[in-house]
Image 1 (cartoon, rainbow, N blue to C red):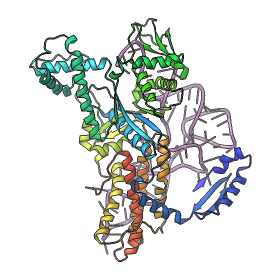
Image 2: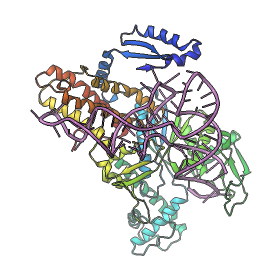
Image 3: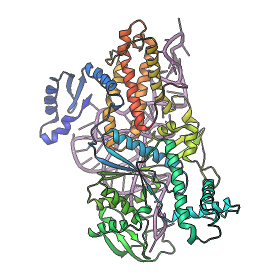
Image 4: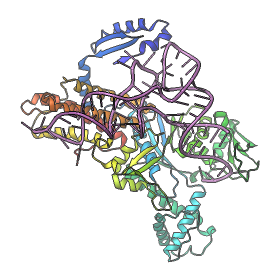
Length: 529
RNA sequence: GGCCCCGUAGCUCAGCGGAUAGAGCAACCGCCUCCUAAGCGGUAGGUCAUAGGUUCGACUCCUAUCGGGGCCGCCA
């Protein structure tokens, strides 16, 4: 173990780093847990911990169970994690899957770090796209009555609306046939939107994601809530009427200067001020977004996190400006963008196309490879890096497949524990570490609580997945050493005491793998099949 | 034109401002009478895109440039 503390402290203390390091070393040596403390280089402090420390960590992990590594860092701070928030116009696709897994794992990670987390989904049910949904569903309703549907350009052609058409027939009979939109649009819209949200909830459930709150955009309309949110901005002098500069570069053909109501988002780092009310007096889509975030702030969250697809990167600054203005800078907002998922089958990329029917849904993925594999794989990349997902490879049982690799380590421990139990051998929480490989594993276990904090601080659940891979690797190494050196094997049939001690370390490994997989929402494997 | 992300080993990628930059694939050489070899060990492989700057110290922070991807509209 090493620390750079002396060099960090040097500036504030006004003393040379080496002097500070010497001083620190002298004091640290008095601690029983420190075996060696020596100064190196420009002021690094190298510490060798007493072997007992690593023994204690193993015991601690076993005693704490999957709560091992949980931290009080969050101190009950209320965090809202908004994720998925897909338009309620169809089933979730692969892109949403990544956002769903990332958001859910991030939420669990923050919980493990002691935050009070709310998982939330914003339903975009107030805009023009749900009108399009209603029209599409109406055609399926006509189809259910034996008429041929007219799926015009721009409507949603997917089959998933066929049952919605049937259900509409069930509910309304033929009363909506041959009627104008003014008669049926509102009812069909509500009906179809609810049907889509049921579909989406089912999709999320298949992945193991449960939201705490579904927040409806529509609920903001007609209740003065948008007006109130804008009033809040207005009171801060951030709303004005004006004309925007034409966009640089290629001008849209029909661009003309118009006066509209603008939010001075540039005040908080946005590139241009954003329109909230169009020149015809109606709201822009941005207005309800402001109201929604106002609502989050009003609900008393101490911090907000939004998980968006990378294609929404252009909205980050204005949303940040909004939250900053509405909370007077007191509520931090972190926006995490999830990059594309590229799909492969046996190394061959396959293109998604709605028209060609090769559109891949969340359900397709989960049905083929299962929720555990899907979740783990979605976290094997940083959120802002593109991710390759190969249907064939992710179910392969080899070390090239990180899911398998980690699960295999857990299964190996469970196998040993079963064998020990069958042989009637005792267990103990106190390990007996002798070999370097055993210490390597114990040290890796000791990193876990710190890793949870770092990952949580950065809002980066992928760090957990990478850590688990490393832990599994250390464990496989140790396992293999048992081949050459029988003393390192965990079960010693003729020596119950040795077995009890040796089996403590793998048990701690299983605890940490369970805890880590738990954060990722993956079930640890008891055995490999 | 503007903004965002990325550029690290042949490939895919890790790397809270700290020492000699790490894994996995692919390549080469080894390890099963054994608690699961579905695994493990070893060798080789690098001007961390480039140029400046801040710092005792930069892959990490700042600026510019080059290269790859994404986004842009009173569309939601």
